[in-house]
Amino acid sequence: MSVQELFVDGERLTGSSARSKNLSAIMSIANTVKSSYGPNGLDKMIISKIGDVSITNDGATILSSLQSTDSAGRILIDLAVQQDEEVGDGTTSVVLLAAALIEYGIGLIEDGVHPTIVVSGYKTAFKHSVGFIRNTLEKKMKHVGYADLLKICESTISSKVIRCSSGLFSKLMVDSVQAVKRVELDKSISYPIEEINILKKQGKSMDESMFIAGYAINCVPSSNLMPTRVNRARIVCLDMDLQQMKMGLSVKITAETPDDLEKIREKEITNSHDKIRKLLKHGVNVIFTTKGISDGCTKLLIEAGALGIRRCKKEDLERIAATTGTKVYSSFEDVTGEEFVPVIGTADSVHIEILGEERCTVISTSKGAGASIILRGANEQILDEMERSVHDGLCTLKRTLESKSVVVGGGAFETALGVYISNFGLSFGTNEQVVIQKFGDALLRIPKTLLVNAALDTNEVYAKLLSEHDKCNWDMGLDLEKGAVVDNFKKGVIEPLDTKLKALRAATEAAISILRIDEVIVLAEDEPPKK
Image 1: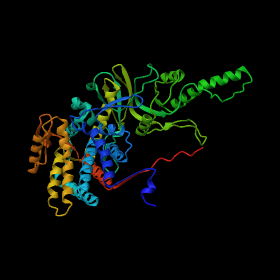
Image 2 (image 1 turned 90 degrees about the horizontal axis):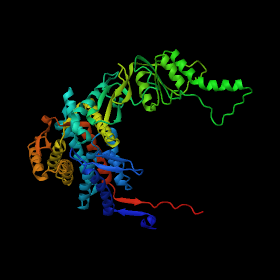
Image 3 (image 1 turned 90 degrees about the vertical axis):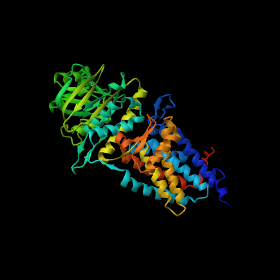
Image 4 (image 1 turned 60 degrees about the horizontal axis):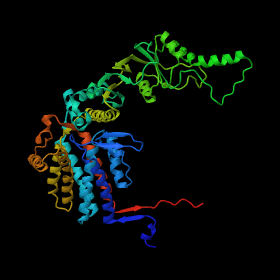
């Protein structure tokens, strides 16, 4: 039996056909996000199956919404999602670079270069790229000042919807990241940005977004008669209902007299009251719960001068509990049969913040309860895109502060690396020479895309950029507003090295995995058994 006969019920592509199929899928994915790259990139409108509309130019958001049935296309989509999860930025550039490497690599294979030579050349080019980055392009910053962080943030959000208010949002993000600064036991410094809560409030303009020192949640007290501020707060978080207890439908109660029935009804009402009294007895003055709070419980809290916050999200309570030192309780029953004694969390204060016509609750503590950014916008779509933009900026700041290594942005990094690798390839006397040069050409695809999306004269500005880098002026990059080549380091256009390095490594690995494929076998779906 021949090999071909084994796949009569499926599809089998070999050699050039398999590579053409993969290249077609890769380029269709890359072309989807190509026009959205850079400060002048265009937005995409994504409409879900149920009609939800999302307008964004975030590469990871666009690609994760695509339902690609091609395996090669899925690799690129997963690449962007992984870059977003690990770094938070560079999702579009990693896809464009991987697509360029694959396109040039397949072109070389079709011209007769063996795939093993292409893979080996890419590995060599990547190895020397890392060495050139570490020795020449990397700029170590012993002390990252406030002004430096603002510049990094402005570079990151230059292609986002909030770029028109980049000064305001850069300050909000820098203040938030510095508010969650944490010194570990080994004296290392970390910035857990997950402790920064982002609240979205519809209405007003994005210029009225604000930073709040403390962890803010989108919940309010169960009554306006409760205090608006509790100092020296003693906190308990509950994942239970503090309303009147109701028996289940399957519960049967046998009452011999009307008095017995009345006692049962009274117990249903007072059960939640007993829980509140028990907490107040232990000195609790702030209660957060994921469920509701009855009028009777609210009355007890008001009389005690305590604060009861209802309808909180479970994840918010878990963060509050971890920060203040309490736990999230789902029951008052102790498995040991002993009396319930809650672990009480502490905070400097819990107060209600008034935002125009709306309110939110803020927990402030000297131990670092995180920070909050309140986003204001006209509609849900804008707020969602603002949230994605702020997330990218926070991730960039975290990477910069923890690594303290930056590179010049605005196309300078990719151009410098592309020119160096192209020249480096000329020193090779083997057939890897042309492969290494193609690696450099793929890197130069990035500044070309920036120029095309900015509607500038690609040939003229690109030629000036290459001319500067041929003179080893590695800091020269693109000023897309003026259509000129400038020193972007002096201008303050810098980005964290970690973002660029991870994107380069991920794109190279993805390209190599695709170029090693010489056969695609698509098996037919199993037929359902006949009844």
